[in-house]
Length: 218
Image (cartoon, rainbow, N blue to C red; front, side, top):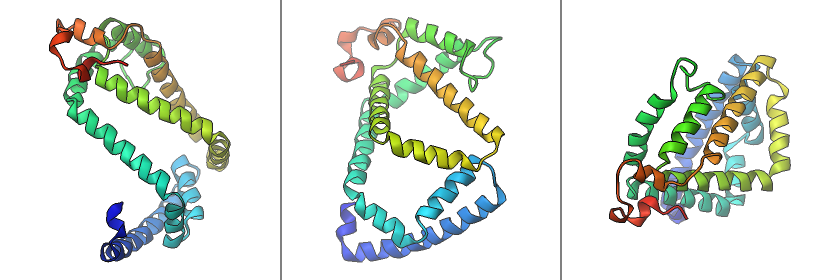
């Protein structure tokens, strides 16, 4: 974002951005006209109605540049910390046995998480813990989402009503089902017992031999 203060760089970026915006707007209009009644089409129409031109988008950016810069930096910081703590490797190592353990005859598709899959996942997490670096990221994300929802509750409700106004009943049911699945996933996570140190204990690792960054659950 600091680079945008360079006039030459800014001019080049503006030209490219205008071309990209025009292409995106044209593609969005085509998609919307060919997919009436679906949520994605409704959301596309909402965006196009608010940003009829590149100048509209640029004005919105300028009005919210501070908030956008903070959000961008927060994402970069979280991603850097995630990588620095080798959490990619820990998460990958955890997910394979986790997904294998929760599936059985009554949980053959984890996309349908509510019910048996949630029960199995809850048991596995309670018994084996979670990587601490992963819980730190999830906790931070949940906190930010909850704060956002509390701050912009009225706007979120208004946009939600607008988005669903022109969609079919089947699309509404799909969205409601997807939201329910997310709630079940969150319920499993927040309902776990113990803390992330269990992740090391059940792997026979000594906490004292690992850097604090891997198991600090504060």
